[in-house]
Amino acid sequence: MNQDVTRRETEAASTPLLRKELLGKGMVALGVAVWIPYLAAVFSESHPPIAPFLALHLTLVLGGVRVKRTGSGGIPPRRGARYRVGTMLVVAGVLVWAPYLYNKYILHDPLVITPFLVSHLSGVVLGGFLRLSDGSKEKSNLGIANERND
Image (cartoon, rainbow, N blue to C red; front, side, top):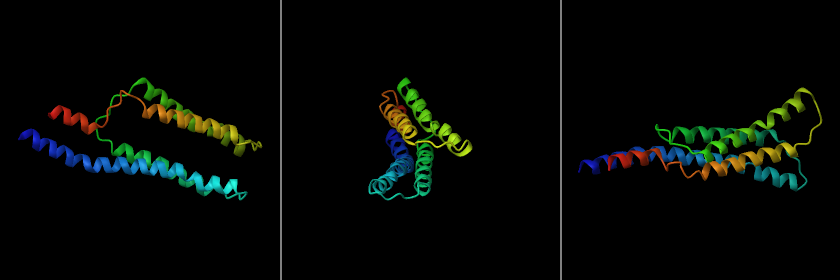
């Protein structure tokens, strides 16, 4: 009986956390999907301004990551080497924009964005896949609590 009560309490507590995690994942997906209409407009010979798309992308992706982190519970799961390498690739993929912005806006050099975009996407996509495929990552922090209570 006591285990059943504890399990129900854990499941009730997990519902808001799962909602936050799902909301965070949805925000990240929408932040990435922002580029679909932008690229469609670029390929159709229309050249829309990039600033609103970039602002929306950054707001949704960064906000989604933050919401997802707050929804993951209090106990940090153990991470494997694949996850750590993935994180480094994501950080490197984002930091690719630092030299681009410096050269373009501080030094006023005419730059082609393509190599920076390819580097960014390579780091973020490959790093994201490595982070998701890390087998040592536990399913959820609440799953740990369930195992301890069984």
